[in-house]
Image (tube, rainbow, N blue to C red):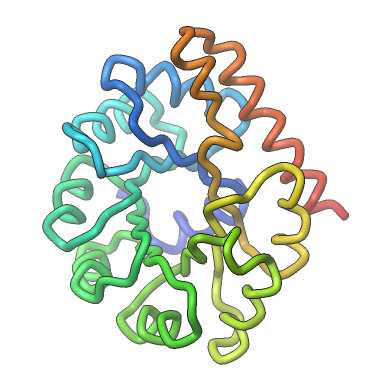
Length: 215
């Protein structure tokens, strides 16, 4: 398993985490491959559906050069399940101390969800490697400074409502990377079986991220 520092560096280098939610098991590998071919190295497969571990294991097996992780991990038993399946990072919509501590013991990067400075401090004291600002659209890019203020140079990944239209503002505010679901993942194309369109949507988002980080 890749060490935490390497995973953190690769997330920062990628600049974007694709959030794959509710994709059928028979489609998850071709969808993940299309998004990866579009330039996204970090793939977050959510654990809020059935057979999430099988999906993670399949993508991890087929896309060995991608960073495959799990999202919507609500508790420590789920974290253990996805880690056993090969998840290289674990993301939660909230801060669950037991989940953070388990990931620390397993040597897996963990990014709990936070919104307030109090939640951020709790997450960092528990051992969080990265903070997921969620939902980012509710508080906006400026909130990253409020989170980093009491904690210093902590890595923040805003997720929820991030799009090509506003991604530059989040990077200007100090985001190390951004998480994106439907703004990056073309679900209509997935339903139509059009992996070329899936790849193109992902590539367009990556282009927006690259442009934002050059400016």
